[in-house]
Length: 109
Length: 113
Image: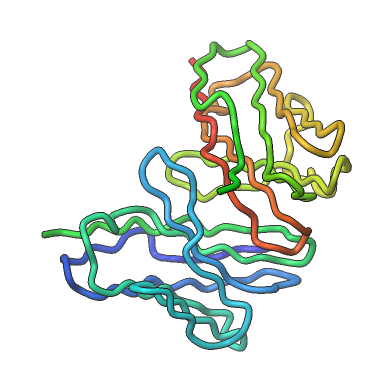
């Protein structure tokens, strides 16, 4: 079957760095994306990796290794507003987006 | 900035009733998706349209759910009859072309009592 695995929850302190890992098993894989979702809201796009390597967007970076079927999201200089759920999602042939179960990030003062 | 529109934002209904959700994708986007997100889980694809045609509805419970996109623009998702387990967020998303990353609308939160 097609699936993405990520930790269910992560806790970190303000100003710290946190890494959320994601391993995937999907067919027709094109790339790995990351979404942020605050309580009651819709997923908002953060980052996308189609090729191996690191993509940096401000405080957020994302990494992909196709050979290891693995990626991660790196959040730096954590702020309280970063407390949210983070989803990795693979985009596959035909445009099908398959989501992981989400990682709940709690940022403590 | 162009956005995906959804209505209503919230819906409370009793089990066995019929409900309908509406989605207006970003102008020019040919691909439209409906996702369901149960609390504490990731979104799950229900149906994917390419223009007015269904591309993938393998996860759509067809005994009670139906979806249409008659003119290839806006779309309606219907549940009849609603069951308690249908309580979830229903998300619509659209993309310019089939393999592009989709943009999500604000969602409709359904509560079935």
